Image 1 (cartoon, rainbow, N blue to C red):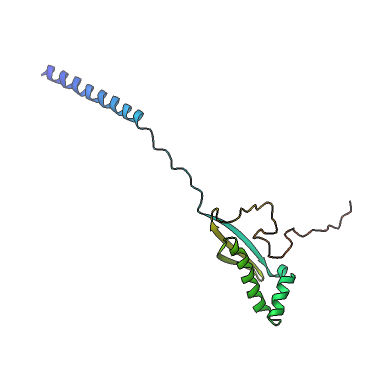
Image 2: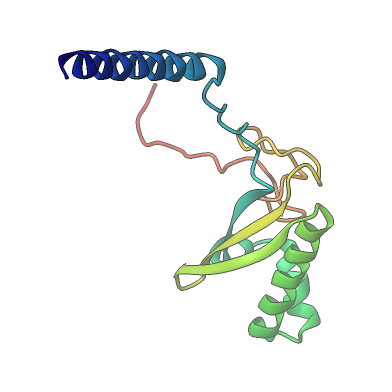
Length: 148
């Protein structure tokens, strides 16, 4: 009986040792699966500020107002359509409009990545969609009251 218990212990120990060796060998042969490569988002986005106080001073908007017989509501709708058409030529699609306060809206736009001309947010140009068609793309100059 002692011989059977001793033999069983040896067999059990050999099986455990063999399982441990096989398990560690299996881990060494099967590396962890690599994380999938990060794909760029399928869309690129722009946020366009529509400030009626600013664009109502522009000659383009005044032409729309004159064509609408002085009706500023109709002129505003036509002018906004004009701006959206301009943006659509570069592939931008309107996704959402958020009104921040009266006469101030953010237009959220998207287009398939790489489908339009590249946009450099830090260096606006005359064709940059965040400027109004026909407007001066440069930020307004601020004049301070202090002397130099």
